[in-house]
Image (cartoon, rainbow, N blue to C red; front, top):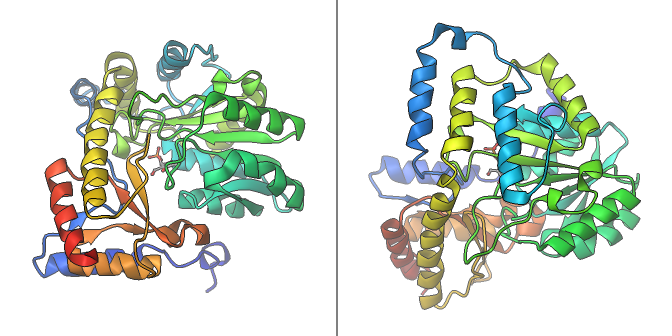
Length: 382
Ligand SMILES: Cc1ncc(COP(=O)(O)O)c(C=O)c1O
């Protein structure tokens, strides 16, 4: 049988690295896994305690609300108010999603239809490039490292005219960051061209050296054109909980909430209750997590620089995006690093053709393990 939507997907680009990693581990090798960006920082204890307590109450085992409990939506709006000085209405401008990834896919399903197109940074977190296709739309790629300058030209070239401008700063995998004036340019551009601006703010919390990533809602007029995805995965270290929010432009948030009322009943209610506690009572967690990732960034960037491998030092995210120091293809280089250094990384080509020539390190092992990884890498490249 043919499964047209699934069959059309390209082969999973990280599969070869994953296969070799498992093979080496089965053979007893100690592989340092800097491939998958799966956060390992402990979650806030107070939230885990609340989860346990809430799970003991039978009433919390029934269906919940797909938009998210009112208290949870109020809590994310409070965080936005405190951090970014923006006043969002929890009733009309906030809905929950089962992680930013699920929220993004269904959001683009709401916004796009066959015959539409979207402007998307490239290389990209893979679902950014695939989600428009799930909705039957096409993608006009824009260089991620020059996104703000590139969207205008891409808009001119795109046929049909894009309905969605997808942005994501700090950016995975390139770690590109943006300052408020450039963010404002994107908002103005989207308004002038009557596009919906979708901002994936998954790395809102993970910034270093005093840099603070701006929310789209710090821009004038953003609430009329933009929605922003904020997730508890990275800053609050709650990846497995699948709690995120789609915030902003009320008609878009309303349309997504309507679609989702047909698709799910929200996440397990104790998770929502405990996530509310995390947002209200573990406000320091994101800064603490950022500190951990900053230490690892320093360990990796300093270590690679000592080897003569010059890599850009990211201001944010949990990644280092490194140009390959040899003329090998990304996939070949990643496989060799795994074989010779026992270090797993993601080949840049897995983030779209524009990622060729790079690898991405995810900072998901501790500083000692990263130092060990650097020693292994020395064997492979020096
Ligand atoms: C840009 C971006 N968006 C979304 C996600 C997924 O976030 P969530 O766990 O909230 O689905 C990731 C995770 O790697 C990401 O890099």
